[in-house]
Structures are given as C-alpha cells and as structure tokens.
Length: 152
Image 1 (cartoon, rainbow, N blue to C red):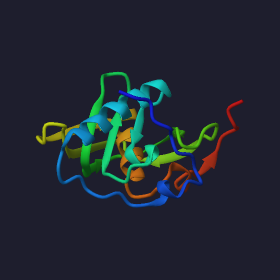
Image 2 (cartoon, rainbow, N blue to C red):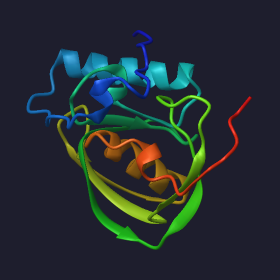
Image 3 (cartoon, rainbow, N blue to C red):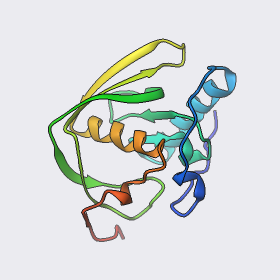
C-alpha cells in the first residue's frame, strides 16, 4: 500500500469526468488500497480517484464505521435535505455551507465485482454525494452557499 499525493484545486484533473471501470484487476485493487491509506493518512472521510490523479469512477468513504469502496457508483434515490459545513482534502483550509440530500441510496460494485447498495443518512449521505460529485468534475466549492472563516 502507498500514500498517494492528493491533487489540489486548480489541478485540471479535478474538473474532468471519470471513466467507468470495466475490469477490476490488480491495478484497481491496488488503487482502492492506496486510496484507503491516503484517506486515513489525511484524516478525511472520503476520497475519489481523481483526487489522486486517476480518472476512474472509484471512491472510498469512511465516516468512522469502516471503509466503503465504491466502483462505478450511482445515486439511485435521494430524500430530504440538509445544509451543513463541508470541506475537501483537495481544498485545504476552505469550508462552507453546502445543501445536500439528507438520505441517499448508492448502487456500486465492490472489489469482487459484486453489485452492492448502501443507504446513508446525514454525514454518510453527504460523503457519498461529495465523492460522487468528484467523479463528474464537480468540487464542493461549486455548491457552497456561504464560506466559513479559513481554518488557521
């Protein structure tokens, strides 16, 4: 496993749409493992492949209940609304209020190629939406309604 460099806002890779994963091979497994290591090293709750320079539809999320690996994730349902503070490992020191669904269901494939479905509320729903946005070239600053003071 390895810690990968997290790309920062301004890097063009963060604004590109990612390609679907067609074959889950050793490179994809290594990427998932490296992304988890990178996420934990940075004390984040989610990380998408473009944040480490890879234009593949892959994200990892852990809000404290264990790693969730998402390959080719899609949001299949949303419910409610929440507005809360959000930040991003690719935009260090910037935080702002973002409105997202309060509950989402995500369908994806796991590292074994098996279809899986996760339903998250609150922070988990927020993390799913945030990371899936990254896969379409959307960064949280695109959705901020009010910035908070810089973290100093």
